[in-house]
Image (cartoon, rainbow, N blue to C red; front, side):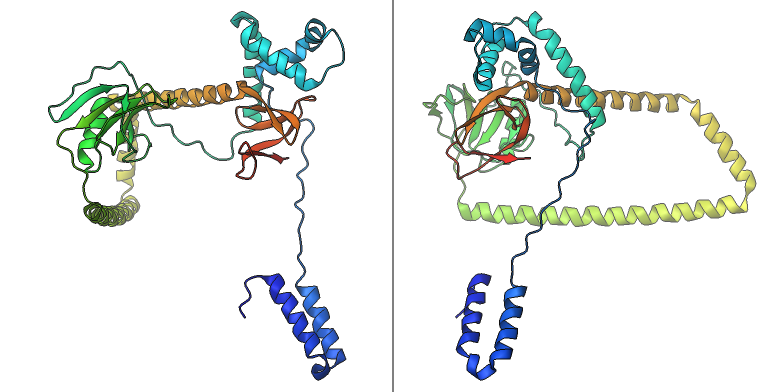
Length: 376
């Protein structure tokens, strides 16, 4: 018999010892049984909770919650007759007022307060991992499009079946029609292009179909290749293998170039050291040349370019921060195991009554709504 689980092995071995107790003797039986039981125990190591600094800079509550904190009693008086009311009901009413009744001028001070507090929080708690660089994506649905003779369209309110190269920017999704056409022409299994609210995507289908499900990414417009036939799977597999071989060959070639460049750089460094040691005059000439270069127009241009690059990076960071702030502002009510909670845009869960942070909402296949609460 083959044992696939440790508990099965444990039970069977102990039964084996009991069956052969007379042959091995009581002392040996007891010794082996005690040792086996002791060394097959499950040991659970509790994780030690990190002690949090009580004076740490805490994350700001969303603007709507800041407004609710200042107007809690007023909401009670005007909407619940001043009686003691569940915190979840007050929060629900406060959200309704914030979304539908307050003007932008009334919201402005709380949004500004949120931004100031979040700036302090980010300064005190820098991210542990570097953020991924955002790819530039400037999609304009109203752009002018030049449709070639080998393409049909546009097919209004029509979409094409199945993605041909995924939805990643620059691979299967593009911000301009020209880029999408260029990529589609290089992909034999691509039958056309569909435009939705998130840009142009490459599709396998060549027969436009009507969107009868009112897709959230619509409305759609499609263009199809003329005289398109889907390549056979065998040919597609062969091309994929050939493509992989080409990629590996390119990678090997790039690595060999890098090694060659490193060897050349090291040789140059050695030559420079030898030259520096043998001639002090050369060192003086080099230093004077360096000083002259600092004030040259080329150096000024380089400084200007680096300043422009740093400005662009700071703009990208500010865009990412604004995206984070938009996610923080969104707050929804959520019921889990019969209890009401509040969830912000980053899936951080708060107690609906006390507004204390209790954990994080994570996806789960077992729960009815596809979410579960992971407590702190």
